[in-house]
Amino acid sequence: MSRKISIIVPKIEEVKEIWDLLTEEDRVLLIQNANLKHYRRNELIHCEGDIPTHMMILVRGKVKIYKNGLGGRTQIVRMLKPNAWFGYRAIFSTKSYHGYNTNAMATEDSSVYQIPASTINTLLHRNASLAYNFIVRLADELGASDARVVSLTQKHVRARLAETILFLKDNYGFREDGSTLDVCLSRDDIASLSNMTTSNAIRTLSGFAKEEIIKIEGRKIKILDEEQLFRINKMG
Amino acid sequence: MSRKISIIVPKIEEVKEIWDLLTEEDRVLLIQNANLKHYRRNELIHCEGDIPTHMMILVRGKVKIYKNGLGGRTQIVRMLKPNAWFGYRAIFSTKSYHGYNTNAMATEDSSVYQIPASTINTLLHRNASLAYNFIVRLADELGASDARVVSLTQKHVRARLAETILFLKDNYGFREDGSTLDVCLSRDDIASLSNMTTSNAIRTLSGFAKEEIIKIEGRKIKILDEEQLFRINKMG
DNA sequence: CTATATTTGTGCTGTAAAACATATTCTCTT
DNA sequence: AAGAGAATATGTTTTACAGCACAAATATAG
Image (cartoon, rainbow over all chains, first blue to last red; front, side):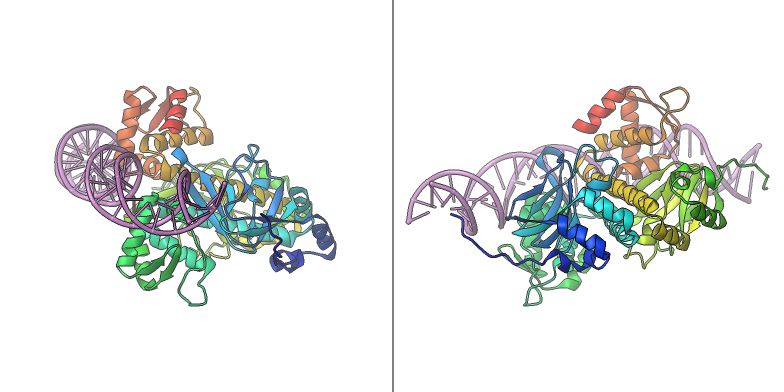
């Protein structure tokens, strides 16, 4: 049974990160072409191999970007929060003739503006500030990705999990209580973020709980001792 | 004792990848500001923490970009060949107030054009084609970096080493004989590329040699059975 | 041209984390 | 509300690979 629910999302004009960079002419083009889409939790937004036709701006919800690895193992490469742009890397890459090389899935109900690749390319070629903004975004993401290579290959499970928890805190922040992460992920997703098996994510997580570094209540994670998480992240 | 040796490098005008995108005015600015520098084998070009002041274009030699990981372990994140641009990510990133987060070292005698960050920023803000070119480069590198995360974390040593050998072949190609890699790296560098210990790189490399997949002669690697390398890279 | 350091090559040992096995609890669907 | 299928939890076994020790071969310097 489907029930009508009113979903509140910002208008494209309210997505300051992009709007403020545009000229009047650009804005008209964007409004004419931006298209809002809604996704439910666990719905796939795009898939490895799909031909990228749109850039997307997440305006509500949370999205995971992940790759399918060997033997069904998946690796989350990015986690998005509202106002994040995504799906644009594949548009630009010379190496994307085989389509996206990541999957995007809503980890909670989400809304997304879709902007055709052609519109983006038009805007980029006539708006240097926008182009520069893309360069900065890509540079940041590349820096993060390079850093991830080292963390995920060299750190031990405890350090990797601590890093994941701290990342989730930095990215999504806390709820009203000031200590519970404002994001709910399955143990499996936490494992994919931290490059470990689900068993190990569960085990290590409950280890942290026993040491009173965190408190777990279902999928809610409350940080009790952030200092200690820093230490584990650094020292192992 | 220093002996004068004439080093042959292309003029900045001959670096087509950038020159062709520039207007007459841009070209004047570039020539006025580009500065050629030479580095000997194993010389450090920039270092983690250094404040990035220049973008660089490698015009002769080979350079490794690497990160210092835990306990002295290093991780090579990119290997450059002539005409590669580097050092530009750190210029753009909003997260680089602590300087570069990678090191760059010449793995053989190399020459590099240095272009001040200010010059690059001026060019980017008035030349949309150049900006777009940067976007494409960054998008490609980001795609490669994301792929690397999965390869290095999920594949086994044999597969990782096979991937490294195939990468070196794609990146640097063969010598005149059509089968010897046109690049000489220490076992240590091969290990850093493949995320394994030096011992394991040596062991696995001589394993491949025993299986007649490759032939090793000091640091020279000759590919005997590329098909088999593909298979090992894919299947493990 | 020695002397010292670095790189390369092998074997052995220990261990972190994957793989597997099995409950138990949660959460969808009908 | 009941039953099926996920997701969570925890213990046991296995193994891939790091870590170490040491020898031989190269490279570098004095």
